[in-house]
Length: 435
Ligand code: B12
Ligand code: SF4
Image (tube, rainbow, N blue to C red):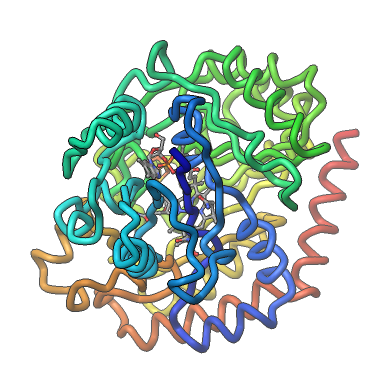
């Protein structure tokens, strides 16, 4: 069989004023370009799960021809899904099915809303493709493909479920950043979080030798790629984290990951981060004031850490590992003064990169359930607005218009050349002091 796997690529924003700012603010544009060009690790994994007797093609959505008659007549098409682009994914699935090509849909959004997805597919896969995709292919070949397959939520990194993602499908393509996953899930359980734990996976860590093998395989197709770890929260376990970092150290790579502020507690981990080539850690700080972090997670973990944020950021950055601090605007305790508070905190902390997004009730999250109960959501489906930049609910202590305007103001305060250079200078001073 000839199987087409199609990735929905790029970043999204609906609000026209924010979109316009996005193309004019230097720092925002450069980060957007960088991340928009990541390939889909989910589909490379699906490819890995495909028996080698089948031919697999990896395609980006943006590469497809606009006319239906020019679409390749694969034996089977697999499409991946995030919430923000689900309308485009469904439309694409409908186009293939209209020309007689069967479609399987999988990924985060399909796992969140399987009944909705099933209306646009011959088969859907919920949870990870591990444990489901090989069965689906067997059934398809035997002419008995089922409408729904349940993939594994646990033990995906263990034999016989684990496969090496097929990085070689990217050979000859212009990717210089690749993702590798070292863990799935995060037990902190923040109310808004739409990452894999709640949706497709229990918390699990990949054996370190498998991570190293993946990095080596990825390096064979792209010379000196920058690696982004596609984890929810890499350093939940400091013991396993140190084992991972010791294994990364001799590889001589530069890399980035997402984790939480507790990495700052552990001197040895910080040293290993720097020595293993970690360029940046992205950390969800969420808000600069402890008051607005109440009830964000069931144990108020983030609220309890908040007063220590400045010191923790300094400890991490002084190792030459920059912190990309993430803030969520529009939490229930946020009033119109939050925008200035974030700007001032970023300046005080000397955060070299900042990611400011709006609280987003992704379907399937406790936040979505609560706001729905409270009657504060936009009429559904608003999935194309789940971009992290578009407002999809009524904030509690300001209007939607105030939240949108405040966000635009904060973007222009943070993402301009002057501010960035100032933050970079502070960061360089900090690093120099340590050397
Ligand atoms: C890398 C990444 C990106 C890359 C994606 C590159 C790509 N083409 O895939 C880039 C930078 C482009 C990106 C963009 C966006 N992202 Co993003 N991203 C991530 C990140 C960090 C890792 C995702 C990943 O690779 N996971 C590892 C793989 C192995 O897991 P997986 O994709 O779930 O795949 C498994 C299963 O889902 C399933 N599967 C997946 N696809 C398919 C297909 C078939 C046919 C089958 C059978 C199975 C299957 O099998 C796989 C193996 O088990 C996550 C956060 C996180 N830690 O997960 C956020 C995350 C996925 N992103 C998110 C968001 C919001 C966005 C944007 C909307 C941001 C924006 N404003 O533009 C866009 C939307 C992109 C789009 N085109 O729609 C949210 C999504 C929430 C949701 N419910 O959709 C996440 C969870 C972050 C968060 N916590 O908010 N992102
Ligand atoms: S700490 Fe991050 S990854 Fe973990 S639950 Fe909270 S938002 Fe999700």
